[in-house]
Length: 125
Image 1 (cartoon, one colour):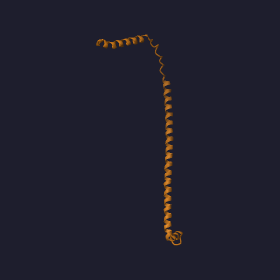
Image 2: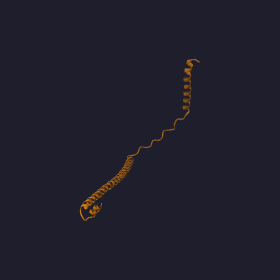
Image 3: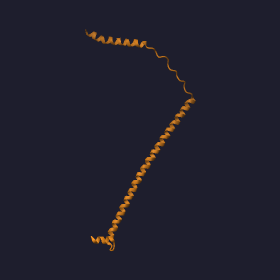
Image 4: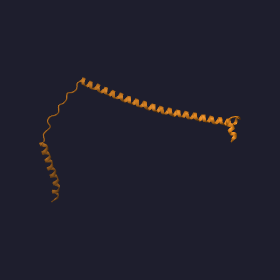
C-alpha cells in the first residue's frame, strides 16, 4: 500500500456516500402545493380586533391597578396599626414610669411629715 492509495480511499468513500444520498433525494416526491393564503382582513374587521384588544388591555390594566391599590392599602393599614400600637405602648410605659416616680417621691415626702403612715414606718426601721 502506498501513500497515495491511503489518501484516495477516504475521498472515494465520501463520494460513494454522497452519490447514495443524492439518488435517494431524487426519488422523493416534491411537496404538493403551497397552502392557500387567507384573504386580508377588511378595515372593519381590523377596527373590531383593535377595539377588542384595547378593551382587553384596559380591563387587564384596571384589574392590576385595583389589586395594587388594594395591596398598598392593606400594607398601609397594617403599618399604621403597628405604629399606633407602638406609640400607645410608649405612652403607656411613660405614664407608668411617671406614676411610679410620683409615688416614690410622695413616699419620701411622707417619711418627713409626722403623723403619716410613711413616717411611722420609717421610725420603726
